[in-house]
Image 1 (cartoon, protein in one colour):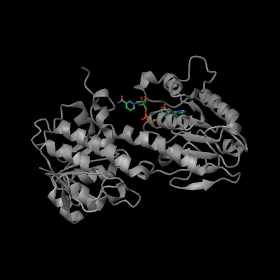
Image 2 (tube, rainbow, N blue to C red):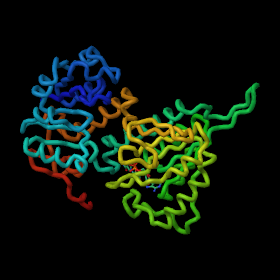
Image 3 (cartoon, rainbow, N blue to C red):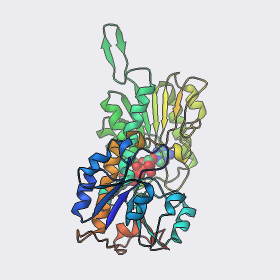
Image 4 (cartoon, rainbow, N blue to C red):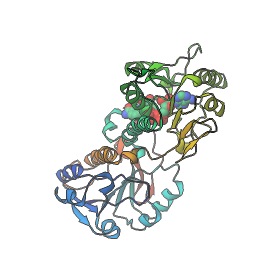
Length: 381
Ligand code: NAD
């Protein structure tokens, strides 16, 4: 069977779903590998580097899609790509079935099978396939780098002959995978870092990375996320008021705010309001990693860098992983080949699509034309 990776069509997408390293692993699983000419170049992988490990370079999109039985890609397919899907094909990609409801139903009619990398259950056994975490980790790191390149001062404090320089103060809101990566990066650059999350159980992780957890004086809570499978739930109005009051207290001293706060299935909560932006010093930087879901900051414009009237820079880029395409492609292609490892128990280049397996079942959004999203709750073992 042939596994193929097309060139991503979206103009801001530099990642690729197959790398020369993943080709080596896929061949060991018994697959032949195809790559569309030029598909890896913006991530730093030339056609030659794929040929060198035995992949076939296909001259065109049509040749790739028609020759491969399994297609691996990054972005959800667009109409043109769906046109190539036939009943024997399996597509493995980010898909976001909730946001792409119509797309899902369109593909159902094609009788193809679609595995959504964003639907891989977040259980320990599936961590090696957890592409959302791989990409969130990169986004958190890149958010700090982006902040640094927009901020006019050092992160670390210095005593120089020309005078003493104070360290930058960074506040990270939301300490999930992206937030923790941002905390690690900011502290390693020497910033004084504070972090806030509604889930108190992350305090220890935050502190172990050298940041200070921002506690609210709210009795038992912050909230207990453990009851909801480790995910946050919307805050009560009282809690939210306390949280906003705390942010108002911090705003005048903070140089860089990185927001990552999300609640599954909802728009991003608004947490850094216009008055807080106005309280910050001119030249301060806000990076809103929740921009795609509406943003945590009032002023965020998705995909844009804006400067507020008071001189605060607000960045709402939604393509942070693609801005580090080499790293992101390497991790994503690894997540994908682990998925294919589980789908190929005989290592013989034959897919065994075991719908009894919680991880495979959870990620499969259409199976031979049948719409299989949402999956049933995982079986209790
Ligand atoms: P996410 O991107 O969905 O959310 C980011 C963070 O925002 C979360 O930590 C959330 O608590 C926080 N948040 C939500 N509302 C907030 C508010 N009003 N104020 C401040 N913070 C707020 O998160 P994620 O990175 O996908 O991780 C979420 C959870 O999933 C964590 O518990 C994580 O440990 C868990 N997880 C588990 C696995 C695994 O076991 N394999 C893998 C990845 C993540």
